[in-house]
Image (cartoon, rainbow, N blue to C red; front, top):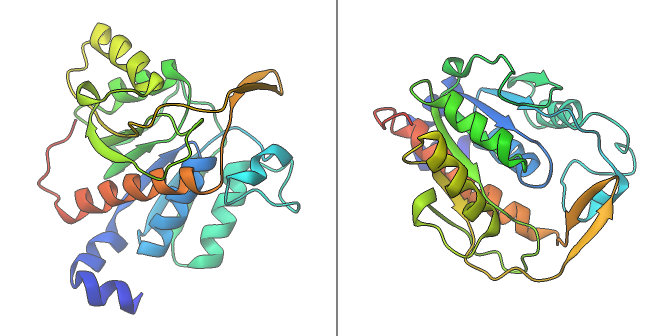
Length: 228
């Protein structure tokens, strides 16, 4: 990681000593895990109960013919090890909800890349006072790689952010950093494995993941930043 050290100096040691948890390692989360690994983060937890499907191949870095049917978290862990065998990977093949036990205080930053509103809100509540959290809003039905970081209550346009604002307000969450897009949704929705799946394209989840990872790295390099 000499080129990273050239940019960060002693900050590279902070990344190596840091622990980050990624919830959901599909389109956005898979790229987040990849970017964190290549940045030199020393311990990465991967939380996802889903398996790779053929329909993931248009946008998920871990989705290949050779990985279809396998647990996403395990595939992602193996990919990280192939990038840097010194990284500690922790695989949690679970679907996170409000009843899930998880030690959030063991991580410097948590990246929420899941797409279920109830689980996202549960994650926001569970992280308060324990660690720093950033949550990804919608990347489906988007064509532009134009994402920004803002507080959830300063977002606009994104349907997922709108739904999140309402539920978070009711839950008493007064602030939450998120990555979102102001682009008007396009495309549509199809039925896929019993779920409503939005239109998607290869580079958009990666663009959102880049902003998520930017935030995580900045928080690790500024350890005095307040927790949620």
